[in-house]
Length: 208
Image (cartoon, rainbow, N blue to C red; front, side):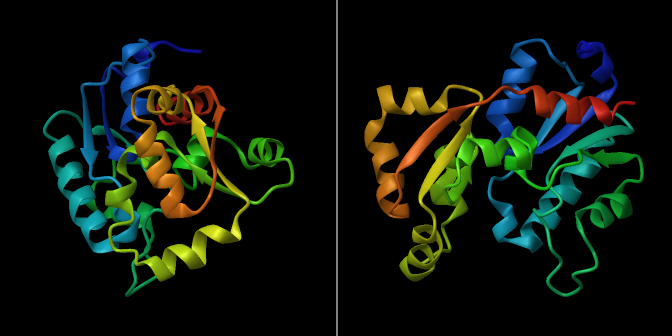
């Protein structure tokens, strides 16, 4: 797989939910973009704020480079007034030079649908990325107990697609935080280790 040189002229814009993964890629030397700009985590729950923050970061990115890669999924933004306007429309209207990695969500950035089918082993799984463990109170801040009880118990368990060792860190250093999240979801939370190879490929696809 190519080295960081492929990204030397790029600015990356990412949802903070993927911050652990992007910082790991930088630390490991996979890429060293000019800048990584972040939006707040969990903005898929607040489309207007997502639009505002993403547009602001697209403007900021142009101060550094015309080459911009956005780490957001196609399902992360829906214009409630005009559902035909998706996240790609939003990005292109603001900066026609920016591209978005071809994934549906942060979960899809880490594993394909076929990989998730194998991991689930026939169980109904609520998928989590590492960022959701750290930011769940912010992501679900507008959820009441009724919505939580309606959503999570439909699943057999929750699984963190862990590419950065977050589950082990929480289990060792802050088990009470892990238990608090599990209790709120009323689901057992398990970890499944994954690599960052899929995310790497998706990022490299946008440099060709």
